Amino acid sequence: MRRIIDNDYLTMFFRLVVGVTFISASFYKIIEPGDFAKSIWFYHIVPGSIINLMAIVLPWLELVCGVCLIFGIYYRSSVIWINIMMVVFIIALTSALIRGLDIDCGCFKAAKSSNGSTLQPFLLDIGLIILTIQLWLSQSRKWMLGKS
Amino acid sequence: MIIRQIIILLIISALLGLLVNTISPNGIELLGKYRDISSGNEPIIPPNAEEGDPSFIALDLAELEFNLGEVLFIDCREFEEFECGTIPGSINIPFDYLPYENLEQYLDSAMGFVSKDYRIITFCSGDECDQSLHLARNLQAFGYKNVSIFFGGSREWENYGLEFERRQDCGE
Image (cartoon, rainbow over the protein chains, first blue to last red):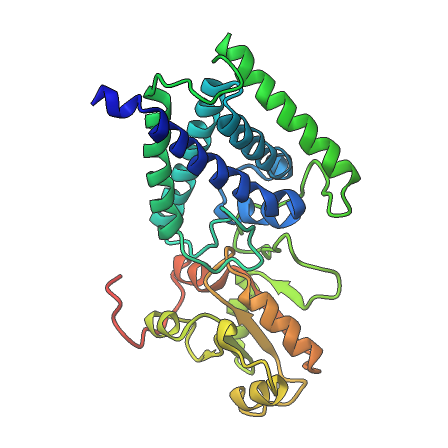
């Protein structure tokens, strides 16, 4: 089991999958922060005063962590950030599912309309968090520019 | 060590975000002005509302107009949602399935050719959906002069225990 978790190729593959997912998820939100702010607002779990600040900073955190993960810079820190973000996303999506909110999750493309499915991104997030657990446990440090 | 790196990643992201937001033509204000939920007597106004939009009305006014009659409530959700429960007497015009061509004629027909001055109130699920806003904008553009949006929608209406019309049992 340990050998599988520490496998260099598996770890690199998961770094690419998670990193590319986060980088691609950040693009539209960076270009259209107003739409992303609206996506956050639709969830009604964040105080209105900090919604815009979140919409400005969060996509960049996704991008920076995604790049760091792929290139192995500040590796463990970026894995921690990605896990934190995944947990926050899952909590938000779960609360939306429980409340029966019919919203566009704002995960990859910020909401133009609020209409969308929350179940599919919820399952995607669960899948990604499994990959990031492997990344956290793996001792592989191959193809990394940084040391940690 | 790792805490320091975590903070560095956050600071880099925050600085990049603030810098790009400052120079981007799509940049937004740092502090947004959002209302959280309706108190029943204040209209919910979505963040994407624009000047010139039809007026937003609160639950109390929607109820008052409902009781007075002489108003057409339009449920903009999908047909299945409409069937599961809606404001009594509403008609269903699912915004997501509107035709691209001859939209004005389609809407005129769907609303039974009511006069352009007739009182119309659009709504959808609640404040997380904005089909009601988009339909109201279209109606206003087509010359309907007395259109309002009840952004609290069917959920707020139902939550306040007002009369609700269920055409089929959806197990709720």
